[in-house]
Structure formats: C-alpha cells, structure tokens
Length: 487
Image (cartoon, rainbow, N blue to C red; front, side, top):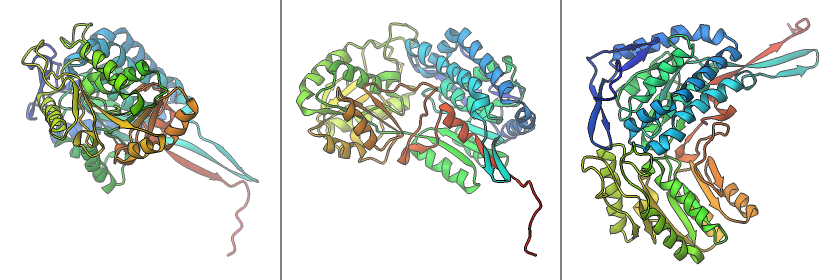
C-alpha cells in the first residue's frame, strides 16, 4: 500500500486510530489497487474530535484576525513548497491526471489559505451607526464548531475552501472527507499544525453515510457545510434545520452553456470541453447541456468530434495524460448506464461512448463522450450524470434558449459564448444560476463567490461572502444619556 497514512484520523494535532471503525479501502482508480486502509470514525472518535474543537475554539476566537490570518498564509506557503507531493497524493486519491492536480488542486487550496489569511482583518470588520446622541455598532463573531463534509472530486481543495474561511473567522472545524478520497485532508491538517495552528482547531475524521448524522446532529456543532449531491444535501439540510444550525449547501447541477452563432467556435468548443471533460467530467458546475445555435451546429460538432477523439487517455501519473479514470467502479457503471440511456432515447452518439482499449482493464476508465440531437425531455439532458458526457442541443433564438436553459430544478452555473457582449450580459442576467461565465467556463478563483440557487444549494464558498456564512452579526446599542421611562 503506497499511500497509507499514519492513522485514519487527525484530532487535537495528532494522528489517532480506532480499529473498531468500519474498514475503508482507498483504491487507486487507475489500477483498482488498494493503496491504503483506514477506519471510519466510531462514536467515540466523533466525540473526541468535537470536544477537541470545542475546547480550542474560544482561545482562537480571542486572537486578532490578523494573527489568525498570519498562520493561514504560512500554511499556503508550505502547500506551495510541497505542491508536487500533494498533487501526486491527490492523483492517487482521485485518479485525476497529474497534469490537472498540479495546477488546480493543492494550488487552489493554497490560494484559499492565502486569500483568507490576507483579508482577515478587513473582512471581519463591523460598522458604526450614529443615532443622534446614542450610537450602535455591529461586529462579526464566530459561530463556534463547524463541520465540513467534502466530496470526492476535489478533496484537498474542498478541505481548504471550507477550512480557510471557518478558521480565519475564529471557528474550529471538524472535516469529514468522502470515503472514496480519504487521504488528502489528513495532509492539510498536518500542514496547518506545521504552520502554527493551535491543536484542536482543524480535525479530520473518516467516515461514511453513518458518520455524517453523528456530526450534523451533535449539540455542540453550530454549522454544517456540505459539498455533495442534491439528495444528500436535502437530507443534511433537513437534519441541520431540525436543530436550527447554520448551513452552506454546495450541491449538484445540470448547467447550460449557450453558444450563439457569432461566437468564436474554437473558444466555445474549448469551453465546452473544459466544462464537460476536465476531471473526467466529475465537476458539479459543468456545463453539461451545451445549447448550440442551429446555424453553426454542423461545424461545431465537426471540430468538437476531432478534438474530443484526440484527447489522450492513460496513466494519470504521466503528465501528458489528459483524461484519467472515474473515481470508482460504481461511478463508471452509473455513467455507462446513462450513455446507454442516451442511445436508447434517440440521441446521436458523436464521439466516445465506451471503455477505452489502451488502458489497464482494472482501471475505471471511460471515453469522453459527446451526444448530439439531444432533446430537453431526454434523461441525459435532465439528470446530473457526473461523468464525461456532453449533451449538445439545438436552438434558434435567444428567448427560446433562455427558457429552455432555465427549465431545470438545478441552478448552480451557466455560461454564454458570444461576440456581442451586450447580449452576453443580457442573457446571463436572465439565467437562473448562482455562478455564470461569459466567453469562458469553470474558472473559480478564490476572489469570487461560488455557489448555486434553486436545488443546487445556498450559501457561498470563497470571496469575502464566505466569511458571512462562517460568522454572525452582533449588534450593540449604546445609550449615552439617562433612560426616560413612562412609569
């Protein structure tokens, strides 16, 4: 086993094991090889992690935001120094090509620590409110113990995206990574301790669907932040609401990407490919419904097919590889079933659609797949597939495509490609989604808010907006004169 950690959990600044927990096998998706064995958290481990966070949080909250931020910035520096090591671990954890992880995973996490470390003081300021002789002021105060529940597509990034704003706002965190990708978050916890974070403030525990409720329903937990599917989000939000806990839900999508007839076709194809095939299609914000104006459909599909079939599938540790395996056998089987459904319902298969023959038979590989002539009522156009499957739909005019783009329960993302920037702004203003792009797709720098609407969740990751979701406003009224009472 080549990625075995010292122990399954990281609590109060050190590795902790409890072999009574259910065994979790960490599998390298490229080969099917077991690379680590860990144990899910028992109730005793959950209690220990939350108690550690609860004990450490008040002293941390009493520090100045600048002092807290200084530690996060040191963590960012350490992550950048170890980018190669962390990226290789991320590739082992997820199967994503090293070509991607080395530029998009630990680096994104480091960006988050650096950003929130730098804006700590300004981002947590309150306000002064003059009231004649009296006055009032507001201040942002931490929530307490926060729980982060991660997804398996960007395990290190998500661990940082949730941890950075939570910590800089003065909270403590207990983070549970996906059981499919349990390794990266442990290294993030190590880095934070090395950077000077006091023990107990960032704890990592492993677990499965039985572990989540133990965290969510714990009376000492003030907030839950989930990245996951819509069905999981509904369950987590309902449980948290029962105890009036703060929640952030970053859930799934079936996002529209609209290509008008005046768009730069090659740029639009590049955006569509990034919005469907990056991370083997396992990105929640992907623009999986690609609406192409009928006037340019033939040329768009011709160039798209050529570029898709030229993508290099192979060993994720080879920096020339562009497409790696799915995260698990089960996920690959799910995606293959959707592809068969697309064929059965009458969509035209343009590229891909099966398992590549140039890779290990034990790996969870699938070809990047393009369907054309997709209609709005087809299953592949309505349900989130979470794999490298692009659906190309035809449209004729602006009003029509906006109505069709919005005809979904999801509202995470969307994009528009057009040479007419007036139209670009007009269209995105009418799209019902939380994060939108014009003439690009899926760029999510830490400086901008990221999150969805409708069934794709609520709350925001990243930017100063995230601090609002990890703190609450306290208002103080100050009377400057005698109290006049009518009795």
